[in-house]
Length: 245
Image (tube, rainbow, N blue to C red):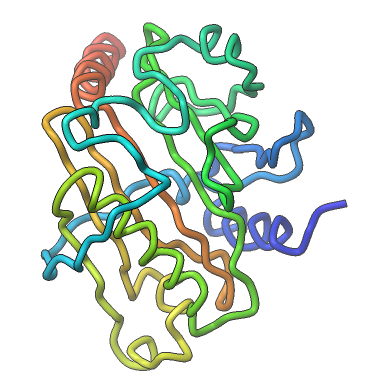
């Protein structure tokens, strides 16, 4: 039986207007049983339009790496690992359709996952090297004001800021009703409002954001990309496209 929030993912992200974009990502929550599909909208990063002042950072007990060690990938994974090497750590993988980010797999919950992490997506380049990780939270439901989701986002923002250094923050409310507090989640869902922060080191790109599956349900999302492997993937992708023309 699908839960209410999984049904929301199907109805909202997998609705008719978005089905053409769907990657058929299975939602696994610490289980080897696929329970729902979500749309590729969850996988795509937000576009930076301006930078807001940095929030004050406080030390974190979750992200314990020093700034100088930030080339390590999250959740106990390793950049450049193959799908088989990831499986050897005990994670179960299910390959998905589509290759916007290369061969992409849904994963069972990593041992070192954040406590409210509900979805983990791993993307590999065409030579089988892990270069991109997406984590999506469990839902913060029945809250059109988005108070719980925003509070959790603020916690993670401080942690990431402490680990990766100053982030470029975009916290922008939409116009009209989307500027009103009671329509915060609706604005996120419609993309009229944007709530995200980008972090970069010489080797890593990280984006924390809020995404919505209906007008009263928020999720936090974190995208990690290894910049060197991303450059190699994008060049390989262009070469493959040239060969098809």
